[in-house]
Image 1 (cartoon, each protein chain N blue to C red):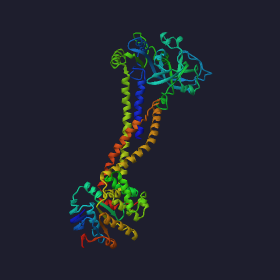
Image 2 (cartoon, each protein chain N blue to C red; image 1 turned 45 degrees about the horizontal axis):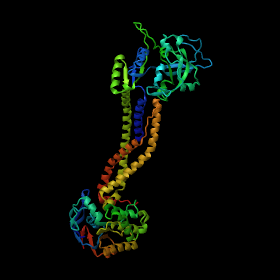
Image 3 (cartoon, rainbow over the protein chains, first blue to last red; image 1 turned 60 degrees about the horizontal axis):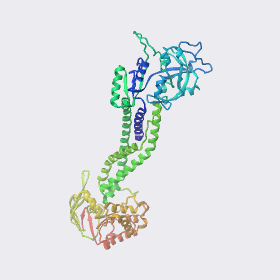
Image 4 (cartoon, each protein chain N blue to C red; image 1 turned 90 degrees about the vertical axis):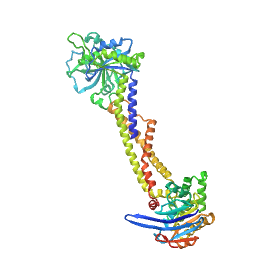
Length: 418
Length: 222
């Protein structure tokens, strides 16, 4: 159990930090709450992208939970926003999905080996947007330039036997389909497991940023002075390599805080620190349970040794009678304790490693991410063994003292001839 | 090695009452003596032997072994004395049941480190001396009473002690085995010069010793 919990603790820590470090982004500008609150995200992103000094890549991102209806492809029709067809939609084939809106052209910079890296999560892409820019935005939201493209989670593709080029309907705030979308690619992600994420959504979908904004109401908003506003949740920024030092990052962060008041600017270090804090709670918990278990085990072992010593009182008295020193007798008891506990520890390693694996599977399922939560290393096993030895030595002192302090005559009188 | 007990008394507290196991016993045993101690049960024979063998401490009086007063000696010193100066033989053999004959004999040799690398050889020689070398791999439970007592004698001789203390060594044995054990003890005394002190009920055993003392109610009466 100790080994299982220690492996989970170690695995959690390493996996979390590793995933953060693998992430290509160095800074994230994000809303403080769940509601998208970064205004003028298109222009801001392009302004940052054209900076040329600090940033090598910029990607605005709108994330929210949306819904789609999957029609029977034989009866599927295509229609643009604002032009609903006169058909009856089969709402039984509705799926709630996590929707990401992005600008493909900018997202390309965050692609690694055909995978898009978002929030340390690797999204494997099979197919991509045909239209890589965001013309719907640049042409003043004219539906003539509405691409209707969507990338759909492979889980949903498989469930409904969908293929590239098939049609799905996007459901708007009114609860009815407001636009058809054509599948231009699929996404494989580990985000959707059997845990919390799956309770909320059954997959993910990726749209053009402006089209998602338009379909969900986060597009142009008229303010009193007539300015147009488009909203998103986050802007991911990859810093130029020569601006990646701690001093430079601080300088950039201060600049961004002035430029985006009321938003959260977090660096990779911030995120690792925060993540480590969160993981630490779990680490402390698992180590606490582990140490408690070890203490109980040691007490149990001590009790066994006391009983054993009591049972061997006659033999110990005889050894003392023929001149065997207390030190030798105590060392013998210690050797017996160590042998017993080591045997238990070695035998315990098997269920320990199995338990570790099961916990790993459970945590992967619970969090719904493909992370190695449990790490079973020789070093960790060695530390557990070392701790066990210290405990055994400590807890065998009492039976040792008891055994060598008993009255010789009484002890010899209880000699048990086996 | 001379043994000298001066005015030894031993009182055991049993709740509110006291039992006087020894009452002012004086005795001198010269080096190389073969002494038997006789007396009825409860006369104080075993208590006397325990006082000599540093297994117990007197309530009053002094015990001198080779001129050294061991009465108030620290337990570690008494333990070394028992290891190197005394060999103990008990009525019920008291062999460690988990160890075989060889290991039982080798245990005190290993503890004393007296024979260095020759310890194992010494243990085998002793088993041969008492005639049970072929049983060295056997556990006590796999040996007869006579064989066990021979192994116990070999163990008593492990560190070549000058004094052998035997508490009714033939008490659990038949006549023939008793005679064999007594032959061994006699040889040890005669040929190796060991001081032998035997507590016994058996007049035949006592007859084979050179001197016999009789005890009654914690006192030497003869």
